Length: 524
Image (cartoon, rainbow, N blue to C red; front, side, top):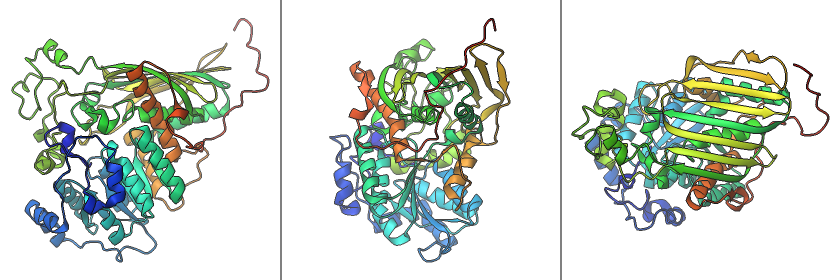
């Protein structure tokens, strides 16, 4: 990922791109970032190549062919990736392995030379030509020289908008990791730019593609429980995955939007899509009460500390992350922190954290459905329970997920074997246990289906309409954006007041709220 040292206050960088390198257009957008932050040293091509040689990048380039703009297959789609952190790996592996018949990776862009080198090394390991590398300020140059059809954005959340907007302005389609962006102002710019350019903007909501969640949509579309009137949704993060958000750049809202945006965008999009509806009014409460300096003392530490790597109490702390013990974490972060000062293992009990660990949200949708949602980041197990209350019955769905830590070889969103259940309970009558649809791999098998949708030239027709664009991306984040505002003000927030002219996402038709309903049976 594109990581900046400002996340940790060690070198206050104003933005990732200099005006000279990136053009006045992006400079004006970057000026909307946090005020009072100084600009980074400008990196030109000569400085970059010199530093790359010091980092060993030049050796990598010399040992493998570099893919030029004219060498890729004419019938293949050309992709560039901006942000080469942990999430980049899924897309790079897909392009260079599973979908190499249809796709070429023609450029990599990041602020960290070491991670760029690592991404190039992966290309060599995949037996593919090594894509040329560009610093963040050379994004326009990468587009001009490599001519990608599509830019894939896997940067820090707070900078997604820069590359989504500029990519479309330069004539590229864009695929962005969730969340699409982190606040209403950036969201409005993305929506406006997509309308102006007509380019395709895809947001990767893999939970839609997970077989058990697709099955929920199938049941709801069938009308078996009638029309949904209300939803209860509770998501639990354990103290492995949940704690990890408090170590990283995610721990500050100006970069992640907090868990209401970064994490819950998955969940809010899932509900929007399952209901084929969009949120209109949001109210929320939130607090940080577990990952605090006070909690550090309560569990036996003398205090919080800067990071695990240098912590004097790491031997007794159950939250220690040993970067050197993981080959992937060491290569991706510990070995490369000298280039940008990013510490992957900061203390989860630091006082400068400003995101919540305990959140409750109430949402009203445009079709009248109401949602009660909670997210807690310190639970004993990971997963979720979601309940749909309908005019003819109720669905209860529970899924337990495996332990996951970003950047390791653990399976993201992997489902515990036997840990998923779905039952349908009619208003009156016997409960029916559903044989749950299953899949293999990350996000319950959803990532593979998502990648087919992204990279196959003619993906299968999808009656569930799981592919998401900027409209779905906007509504997924705006529930969280509104929740953050509600937490700050104590007031309910109206979604239409935040972003204008989003448009209705493409959702499948659902059972209408009209017509007769069956009379519940007596004495059932």
